[in-house]
Length: 329
Image (cartoon, rainbow, N blue to C red):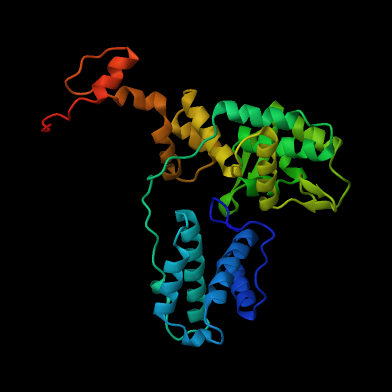
């Protein structure tokens, strides 16, 4: 299954193939990609290899076959999923050409998916639904799994951590005296963040009355079997279960990150402040939230041409029905 962000959910096995094993090693050693990204690339390429005609050697692969696969795959797929598959196949074709498996560089045959920067709105969870989600999770804190899940939800919702960052959080990353945590983000960037009392207390409750004794240094672990670090996919699964418990439609873990940014803007925070909390490396990443910054956008709204500002809901609705200036009725 491919998630909302276009990544592969845990539990999806990569097909057993010598070329995929070599591709994974190449991604690790030559490109330095994170293990979860290597798995994602190999899984996507596995689907590509399975689509090829039986017995067709990679040496005989041509541009038409590559393009036809991508066009067929992109039918009824969202942009993120299409981009993830295209990125993986394109990288694989560079690998096969660099290693002499394919005599011709075919990565140019992978069509780019149509998308425009800042074209979409960040999907946030309404504040009432978010509090409902956290309240439902808090009400079941009598068991070890629920203590763990509640702490995870608070890190996602109150600090805006990505699910992979929560999964990578280690015991030594928490500075209890300073009230800070060290977060290993995208590109292995390391940043320190304040740890608010609410998620801090939830983590402490899990560590003292839930987490099993084990050798792993991961903060969040499995309980059966005990002591295995949770994966990013497991973090997303926890969010889904929490939504079902609260009676809400299932959302992805990243939606909580968007919700934090949106709530900060509505509370009066600036875009640079939001980017600092979300640890964006580029202002372009934060710019998308400008479209949901109602406080800053409200002064830009002008009265409809030819209308008299009135406050009644009926008059506002009627003003929207007036002809566009200089248009013929």
